Image (cartoon, rainbow, N blue to C red):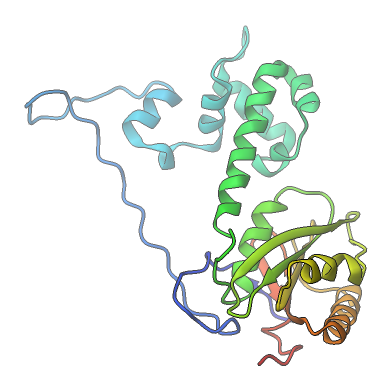
Length: 265
């Protein structure tokens, strides 16, 4: 069955949840070079010798992952400068996604020490919190791509399946996001009471359920279809609409709503 590319976060305009609008990201402008102090009209040329100088002169978007990580590390060790250490860590852990899910103990054991390891953990934590801010209560959910965007960031790098439920009000605005189950590499067992318990307590009108596939392929399994049918039936009994089940991969997602498995009002 077809899969979809993850759409950008929801806009504030009122759009049908089940209509996927065409989206476009505004072009990112290249930062202008820094100029000297005072009234001089000619720019002062800076020599970008390291990550700190390059981010000042060129801006963060022009830095590599290793250069950004080197700024978090701040210093290296004898015989291994910060940028070389960053390159080594990215190779050892398989890039940012692998690095983001490591513990302080794991990182400290690879030459970082507890202080640098804590700084790396905190940096990834801030990035996760920022991604979740776009899904705070009151955010309008228009389609499965809005859910996929948040789940993809929340579960990025996870080696297990994680099951989520998004609680919605009568206008399809977010009331809360709950992680209700964590499973193994290819399944996340979930019971209707875990999904609908928060919905009943918080008086949600509808829910969207979602989970990640650590393999990166969002194609739904037979078990995914069975879970979808079971939860939709349970929601009908409780008077809570299950509007969609979104399966999230690395950079694509699968929406049961888009494939007309549900009949939406």
